[in-house]
Amino acid sequence: MQHTTRNVTLLAALALASCVGPNYHRPSAPVPQRFKEAEGWKPAEPREVASGADWWSVYEDPTLDGLEKQIDISNQTLKVSEAAWREATALVTEARAALFPVVGVSATGTRSGGPGAGAANGAASSTAAVQSMPRNQFELAGTGSWDIDIWGKIRRTIESNIASARASEADLAAARLSAQATLATDYIELRVADEQQHLLDETVDAYKRSLDITQNQYKVGVAAKADVITAETQLEGAESQQIAIGVTRAILEHAIAVLIGKAPGDFTLAPAKFGTLVPVIPLGVPSALLERRPDIAGAERRMAAANAQIGIAIAAFFPDLTLSGSYGYASNVVSGLVKAPNNLWSVGGAATDTLLDFGLRPAQVRQARAAYDAAVANYRQTVLAAFQQVEDELATLRILEQQVQVQEQTVRDANLAVQLTLNQYKAGTVAYTSVITAQTTALADSQTLLGIRQNRLVASVVLIEALGGGWNAASLGTSGGTAATLAAHPTASH
Image (cartoon, rainbow, N blue to C red; front, side):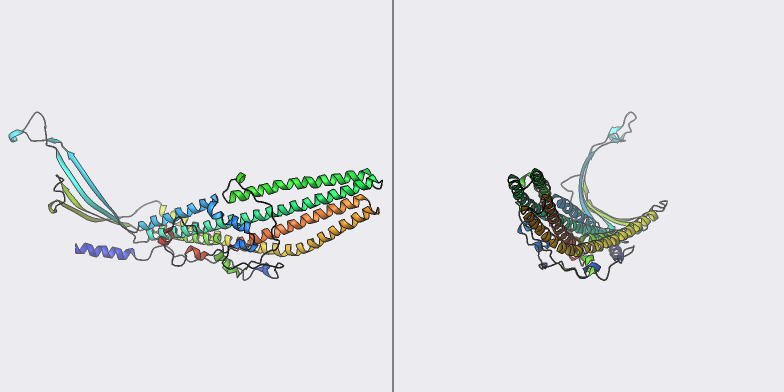
């Protein structure tokens, strides 16, 4: 028995030895020294991001704030990602269980009988077998088995599952950030639609006044009937645009309803104004982007999971060792079952290895290494795409800032031209076609300005999303995290 104990201790020590396969080290990724497009970019009258606040608070809109907070509660796409994360954490606990022995208990009772060879008084029977008396057999035993993880196959599996669970958690964060950014974009576009509606309402009112002037001029014989018809046509065109904007607004309102998990028919947003100032978003150093974007963190964790799979494939070249044992009692009567004379026990071990597999295991190792190489390439591509997105939005904001200044002056000039031309028409010095041209130009310029402002605000949302929206990879517990920690709160929302 002492010899057996020493063997078990030795095997336990072997189980703590280093795992086969490569240990994970994060591969390098192309990271610039600075953001090229960040130089000289500073929107007029900016608002700084509040420290520790939700990222959308920079827009200072209470309605948007209330809508964003409903994402975590009711968004169904987010619930799919959250369920996938809980599934991944459960797999971590499942893999950890394989490190420990499996202990069970069994209880059986049988009654059996069969043909006998003896007859009465010990005389041989030559005609037929004599049926033996039925016999009872009862057993109660505890069993145990332990798959000794000498080569680290189980530990590599746990390592892979933990990395996959953290990647799933990063996917959940990415899905949440995407839903928040989509909601903010839809909300901005809806408010721009409200501004367009307001612009068209004012335009219709102005065109009605122009029509009244033209009709009065026609009544006194100063203007021609064609001028009245032209004014009516222009008014009707503006009224058509005024009606059409309702389609855009309705679609955006329905999209917002779905994002917050409500039926479109039960959700409405009253028209309101939205700020036009673009907030300043702290950029930080480019290398920080590797920790601030959940998609990059997820791609990095998938590399770690793929690396562990190489160790699992290599471990298949080594034998598996399993210890097993049982201890219990057996008797033909239940009342005297648990007694020392009825004691039964056994202990043993089994080692299994594959001698010939016709290239299966080498192919599995090559497959695992190829999957790791693909994960590395995907990680590096994700990093490159992230920097591209940041640079794109910085360039967009910088260029649109210049454009909006020019367009604002254009709108002022166009509105002044309308007033001057209308006064000249009243004085009879220009034809009504000049008024139509000036008014059409002014409306188009105002609509263009609204479009530029919309693009700037949307670009600011996309930039915040590209920078991670305030998220940080430290929330994944990459330093000192354990599978038990990951699985402790399976229904929590991080």
